[in-house]
Amino acid sequence: MDKAAAEDVLDEFEAAHPDIAVARIRPGLIGQYEFGSALLRYALPDLVPSAIVDHLPILPIDRSFAVPAVHSDDVADAIVRVLDRRATGPYNLGGPTPVRAHDVADAFGARIVPVPSRVLSAAARLGFETHLSAVHHGWVDLAFATPMLHTDRARRDLDWTPRMDGPDVVREVVRGMRDDAGSITSALRSRTVVDRIRAFGRRGFISRAKRP
Image (cartoon, rainbow, N blue to C red; front, side, top):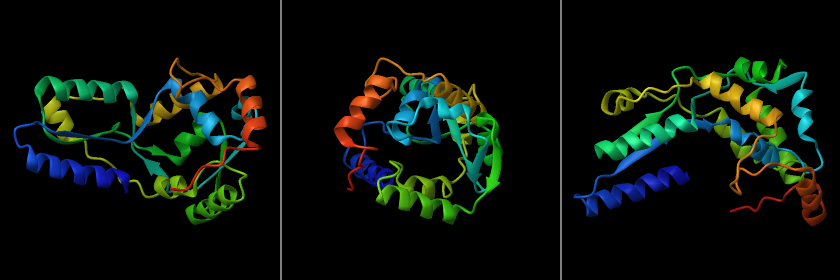
């Protein structure tokens, strides 16, 4: 909804400022190695160790799962090309191969246990509302309602070709989760034991996400 609202803002801006070049970047699921620790910090309760990533024998997931994915370096490359060309209009970004359920399971070394998406959504809703999970069920719903992206325009107008395919992006992210990878920025900082203990003392079992 926020992305659609942002596009409405761009429509109004373009109409009011026809002399300014406006481009719209529409990436799929963005990933990179350094995202690993941040994802664990968001998805896991504070006292659950990161090592759990190495011990996931099964993955409950609907086999219909399929999302476009793109590496952050490829997104940055597309943005540079847009700026260099003063390109305008929308540009979808994604690897040629979508990420499917078996790609996620393979990345974790887990076996798929088929679970309907509506059941996963209901479980996520229950976990969020009872503060057992920090993951809002809307993310689960979005995962099973994400459209595939046609990237022909980016390839044609920007000469853009992603260097990493969708399943490879997921494998890199999971590797980053295993390595507790992070970066120097606050958003991508590592999920350290000290941070997790401090967070637990400050807010309890998990963070309590605020409703909009």
